[in-house]
Image (cartoon, rainbow, N blue to C red; front, side, top):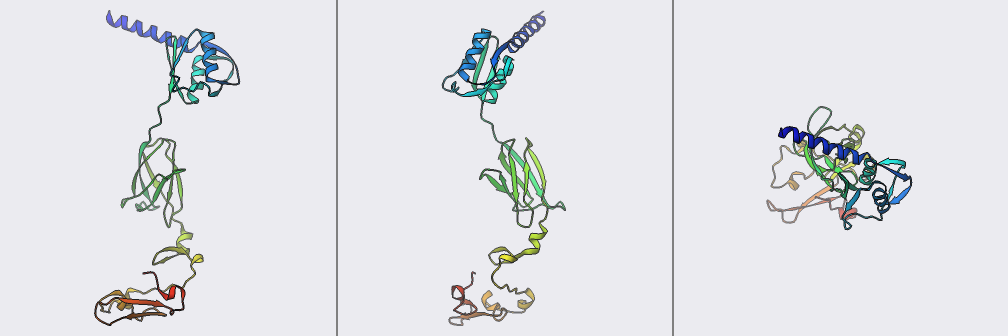
Length: 257
């Protein structure tokens, strides 16, 4: 008996809500303020629009479709304007939409062979929020459901990946073959060949493997053309000075060590 009564009350409530949503309001079909929209609804339907004046800007302009429009359609108009709209019996309660919460997005970045890539920069497009992949190519970042992730790493093509509401993303980066062919690794970074203005000399391990010295400066003595290595006292362990192409060269020939 109790279940029957509860079911009947629930059905009545659904009918009331459905009836309220389906009430029709005649609209001119142009821009109007929220206050004018509330007034038209209350005048034509007899329903009450309840809101907090400190949270709802009634002077805000909204675009309303023309003709006879249902209450539900008008509620959609308010939601598109950034307000929440709840229909309860003969009342329409309007308030601020709660802000979107950024959800956590996890992922793994690998190359075309499936090997994880460390040190890939992962940035939310249009922001300064970002992170870097770890040793296993994994990353974790808080991002909106509609965000776009920008990925960049030396030797790989940049890529944009939409989050699309996903909590886990596996990403494959393609190798940038042109970059690899044109890149030169120098002591302080990586440069393209076309931007490299100085000469590059390479000392292989074979050239120094049989040498024994107190420091790397002494080991490099005589291995690079144009580089002079001197020691102030000649004592073992004494620091050395390096000079490239003489004192009249750039920065007095002092290299960046």
